[in-house]
Length: 436
Image (cartoon, rainbow, N blue to C red; front, top):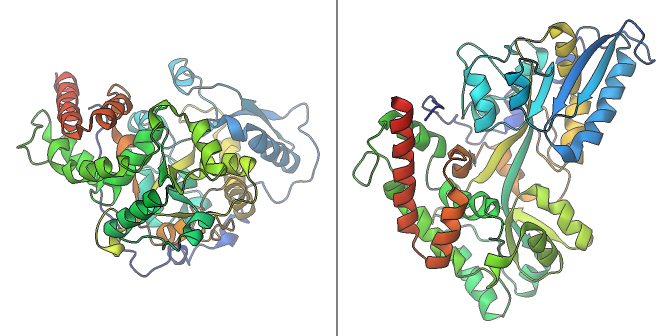
């Protein structure tokens, strides 16, 4: 593998709210950010410095554009162009990256972190407001020595979305153990209700949901992949760690879950799933907060909640699948670092960052962030507060390995063992290639 990760450790946050971890750096830390509080209104003047801002998520471009105009009114000496590039790589290939980037923290971004092309942001006031557990999470894929290369901006937490009306009608509890979850599925199936709506036509929905959820509370995913990298080419059923060995129980759980999917799952897409769930045609749905607005578009009055999928018999083992949905960075090659840092400071102000996360169904990443107000997110808030979460196993697997296709085949045949054997083989192949 080209991505090398250090062995991760999980901070001990038992009984401690994440928002209490940064008591010494409250919301007032940003009030003295350079150049942001003493400027009047108005638009950028003719002699303004122009910087470029690149934001990855197309669905929030308009939202960020309003923030950029707000920043310009506060700092008329700076003009911000909203970069409309759809992918990150060409910017760095041309040695012309945007002055500020806002990107999903994943394997793609990790390549640039490893190369040291992002500036150190650890001295910014906002950096002191990032709790240890969120900072560790943001470094799961890669870390450049001595630098805080990105500032986490938004956290997405995913779990089981469930229809509260159906659960109430059949007097079903929110399950806290694996046995309880299976019992709920059995009762629903007996009542002729589809327990879980699945959409296998788009394979990303399988690895984000079924694969990641089944693995997450049973395997320490960052540690597993770090150890897998350290093993080099020695990967198989008898090696210290392997997919065949460590993922055997999770995939047995996954096989069980497929018994409770809708029969036409193989031909159903993500939009089909949102429509069906919004119409009340299933009790549960393995999706993240990004699906909630689509479901609400179908039935704005549908009562839904969320919970972490339990895959063990110990309720305390439950965890939520999370990812740093957006993170801010400034390239080392920026010719306007001071102005870029002003923009980052502005975007990290409590009212700005908290407003974005509240409006976009995400969870805060700062120690002083308020809890999610939307009741649909409330079920996963305790996991975010206690750092009882994990990055999805599928996010550590490079796109050169067609995980989604393997999962489609495993579900249709019931042969998950063959899939795990193939994953070991593919990882060994990549390790051989990169070790030469």
